[in-house]
Amino acid sequence: MINGVATKHLKVIPDERGRLMEILRNDDNIFVKFGQVYLTTTYPGVVKAWHYHKKQDDFITCVKGMLKLVVFDGRDGSPTKGEVNEFFIGEHNPLVIKVPAMIYHGWKCVSEDEALVINCPTEPYNRENPDEYRLDPHVNDIPYKWERKDG
Image (tube, rainbow, N blue to C red; front, side, top):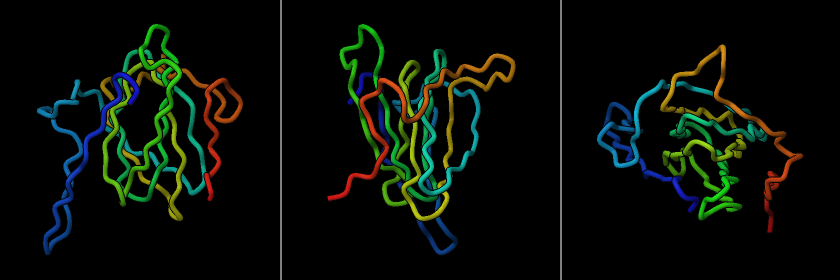
């Protein structure tokens, strides 16, 4: 696992009324601090990548559909520099993934329906000076291809 990346398995608690799933608590060992919470969606087959943040950590979970979430460590001096981690998260594997600052990350919706993604970053979004640094999803130096791996 890339240094600083962490996962938390999420427990779904069903009853006759529906389901409850806690995503992130301030007493979780992976919790850092609260910035904001937002929902984003991704259509089937769409790749949203690559970017990183200099200041914020992200805590990403998929509550509907499935994502292939990928992280890449390009940090100089990191013991895991050059490593890629791939996670399949969503309805069939409820996880929250902590993506620390300076780690490239992105995802692809791998379900037949739109994926609903919740992120709880440690910093609120700054519209005037966004903490986002982007690369093209397909043309870059990251050793990862978004194609499905059949076989």
